[in-house]
Length: 206
Image (cartoon, rainbow, N blue to C red; front, top):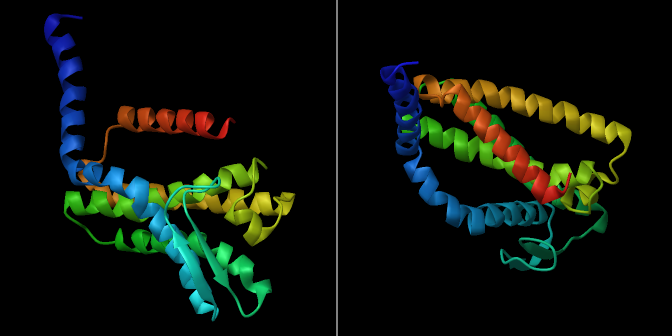
């Protein structure tokens, strides 16, 4: 391989990386505040909205980490048997937002808008669902899904596997359409997938 070929092999990935950084600059700036507070706020707000929809009262609302959670609410319901619906609130919110984003992908958007729609309307919601689904399905502690669906029996696990496979498939279509010609190259997607898998292994001890 001559010098020119080596230069092209190096410059092309650098150019691709720079193009993706420019495309996602705004979203990267939003990651720290959203990761620390924003996603937790929306998660807890979904719980609260379900409480209000069921005629209950929210007595405490926090987005500060503590006691094994990133945030929490306290509430009173007219019928305590409805509490599984409150626990399912965030999952229903995220699933609805993902469905909306998939619908919006039917239209063409400017590159920055399309990337933002996929990032915040699909990837982040799916990430929060996985944050709870992985430990739930692997029986590594209790979270909202335990309270919403009970223990992870075989039929529940099969249901979740089908739903997650469908979510990844729909996400791939939404990703393809929202990014259009500005999609990240294959090597970058492979690196992102490997990094996500590593983070999951470290975080959940799988």
